[in-house]
Image 1 (cartoon, rainbow, N blue to C red):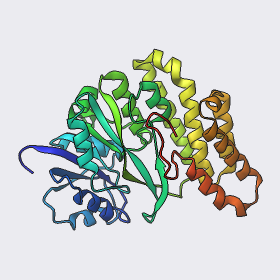
Image 2 (tube, helix red, strand yellow):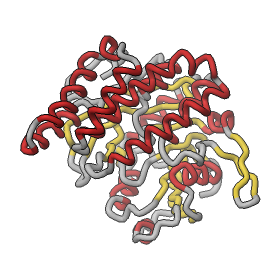
Image 3 (spheres, rainbow, N blue to C red):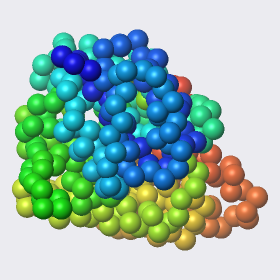
Image 4 (tube, helix red, strand yellow):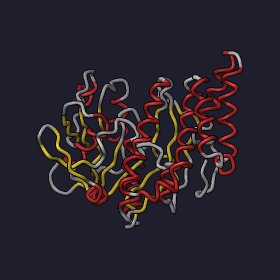
Length: 343
């Protein structure tokens, strides 16, 4: 695409042949049509890229690279992007048709906002709505809000000004070539929150949400508890990195944020039906910063109950408990919640 492009959509692709056609289609069906779509083939070995090539739309560009993970694929997309705004969609998630239009309106009318995000609705592996929504705080988001609660929720919810990335980029040498990094490719997990935290701590850009659930976030029922512990490990590395550039902030907020992260991972363990890990994680959360019981009694007690009931009750109750754990993953069954309230 030549000339000025309002928005670049970046889709990292790796082993997603089951989902990628629907994901690309959800972009092409946007009410805002002035975009380029950068498909970053992260050395995918299945039919994903072949499916992408099946679309005849001239706005689609496929860029292939050696496998570098999600952060590396996004960085490649950012370097190739021509848009004033950059939008990210993970290759198993979906957008509703008005996603781009509403974010561009939001950014165009709020010049101090650098990251615009939407609420998200959860879908299952077949793409069916679960009736569950992430309903986070949307305005006046502080650095502690972001660190403790990550209201953005997932990487498919954001549209970001190009200038924001220019302010946080840093040089790295890859295969003897120096290039700019925006997301830190040393992180194979938690790369989103690491980047958002750098933005809110190192720049003056505001992060603000819009109330509609415009992102459909796919919940995969699979997964191993080992992955949860890897995620905790990568989150701890965010702490180590942030201590270098924001030591006072980390000293103040490290324990509360760790407790929220442990509680979140405990909910994930409940969903994976690993009662031992779930109980261990929720116990560690309360030992780390018991005040989360006062700050968010409903979610903390529900997570504690789900973990212990999963440990104590027979297997026939697991499916109900799994639904319970999904209910408390950050969402709420269609009841309206004030914008300044966490769920």
